[in-house]
Image (tube, rainbow over all chains, first blue to last red; front, side, top):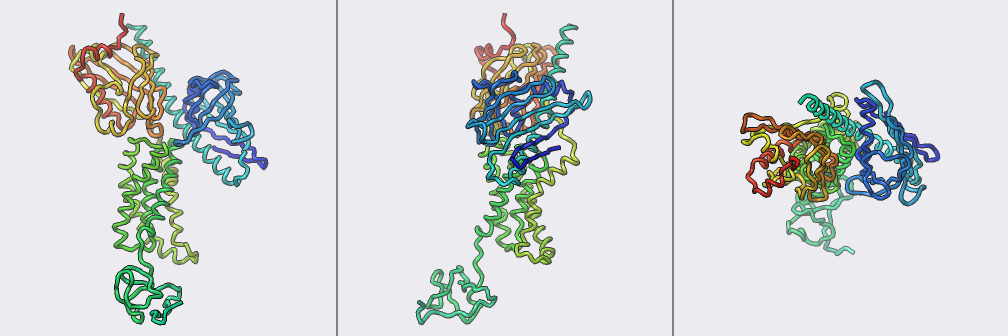
Length: 184
Length: 361
């Protein structure tokens, strides 16, 4: 389910969720591959720290981020901070314009995992922020946010399915190797 | 001011205040003082309506281009929509070409002789234009573009006839409406075709499982020699087949070397593309498995490389069967054969020494 709310004061609250056929541990392992996971979003292309080093794994809370954005050949960079990391459950980061905190749709991205049963969980993406281009008709803003969230949902579904497959194969491969070591 | 010899024509019989035109070239005949067209010389008689016309001449590009541009533009937007969400299914591969074809083919008052020639010309041109737009926008690489041309062209021709059918099917229904632009209402229906097919796929088609391609080849060498000979696509010495050469980025060089679990090889290609492969299983003489941990500018929107492996089974003392199981989609088999050929091709001693993967004492 995807929900978009735009308050009279232009506060944005958008959320979407994907059901994953994986345990929360497996899903968290996928989320921990930070750069790859963030790049699954259609507009986030890469995640680096303030020095420009790619963050392949989830860094500690408080890490300053540089978030590459792009679609097609367009590309620009925004900044942010990893403000919350709850292992096995959630992480959140801010996504702000490099020109200042009050321009270019400052918002917060939060990914949350909720177990459904042993073999399934729900991954929820929540985006909260304030729309700064207030000259735009509200209907267009709502349509745009809706479109972006649906794209994000589809991309997350594809990315997590592939990554979980990779994870399981890797586990199987490791188990085979361990068996070989035990029984030469 | 008109000259006294200016030829006077009767009023427009349909009361639309049109100007009389030459039958031969469409030149406007108002204000001339001799009974022949100044442009092409064809003679006319102002009192004989059969020798001139009130209709504007048919200008094919004015008639076809707006519709064709609309079709390609909307097709592009749908493609961006599907590519951005990694939804490569019925909507993209079937819906978009059908919609583009139907928009081009939908002509409520088509002129049959022009229709037959120009519609096909425009349809054939619109496919590469659409694909080039996607490539220019970074949504498709060369390989994906070629595949799209092959898939889109026949479906777009089917779409043309769908458009023609819709024009005839809706003609009598639309006459009942008083809206002046009623003839264009079915276009709104046509534009929703990709979305409708996408929803239908989600509702009825089972999700596509991750694809694995396996290629076998018996090599005339023992297992350990085969192990020492294995190479990645980027390290093969001979020229790749045309489909790989044309479609995929060209390998430039390889950085790093896989010898043990956790080792990385960075395969660098032209156009700032690169793949980073990390070994997940290394059992000399038996199996090498790797995962692709980074895929940059390498058909990112259409192919996601996950992992692959070489498995070496001894057929007898001197022959080995090799299986490579990368999870790729389309070019995998031809790429596999290319790599396997690279393993058995004769190479110099130095090159052979460079390839040895076993940890050296």
